[in-house]
Image 1 (spheres, one colour):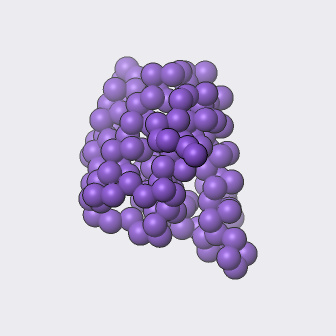
Image 2: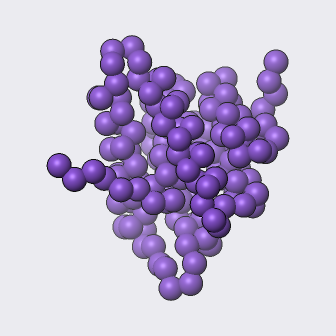
Length: 148
């Protein structure tokens, strides 16, 4: 069996899916739409010269990241899925941070996208806030949500 490889787009999508789905165990259509729109926008801005992603490419990347996310749940011991996903979120966030092109602008853009995705279903619940705050802290940013 060949191990799947993931690039920065897959990792960014994974973070978006995890923060949206992990927190309320549901990924609704509005959240999916916003994730795909945000990804299409930032890959067009950040992918670099000569690298073009079509809408179909972005949707394929979304499905790849979603399978990555769901496979963690399938492989996790019973009642440990959330812990395993949080571990993976931390690994992915730290992996992105180690990229030579990673900077505060990218970090702020992705955090802003995570907030917009969280708002897409009409409510930003505490778990979504915690997930986004955790990523912001890992990236050395101010946390966007109040922490008691």
